[in-house]
Length: 220
Image (cartoon, rainbow, N blue to C red; front, top):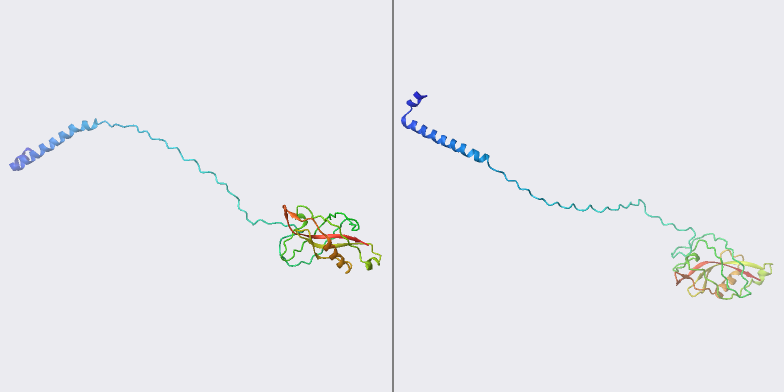
């Protein structure tokens, strides 16, 4: 090694020696700084983190079960007084039994009606007996008797079925006479309708028109 250094030119040798000295100084400086770096104290501070209140749970939604089919409106088969405009319907009228009424004596008649399927008249809104607050009551005397030609056949009493409309004033409007046994009784039925006056039909406290079948018994 010494021979090799002696062979080097003097300027180069001096340069190498200077470089070695610089490297040695750098190394020594690093050794001095190493303990200081090792002794560095790491300060850790405790940080208080505020606890956030969790949001309230969402309200439970009420799940409504969907209806798969549209609601059905059930109507009675024998509804009367429906406020509809319909074409006349041919229907068999039920027999209605009414206590006999002696027209020779003044009395109030309160028929016990059993009304079948109604036939609403065009452009007239009427109500059946079961739709009223109470059944209209006959308030006047009616003078009607059997025609003499019918009485001559030995008939002493008959029942007429009058299809009538009672107006808000209590006036009677004759619509028809179903199951008429004698044609002569048409005049008698019209006479009864013209004479009769009822209490005003009431529905929910208001005057309305009522339509029903009125059974009337007439005698000789």
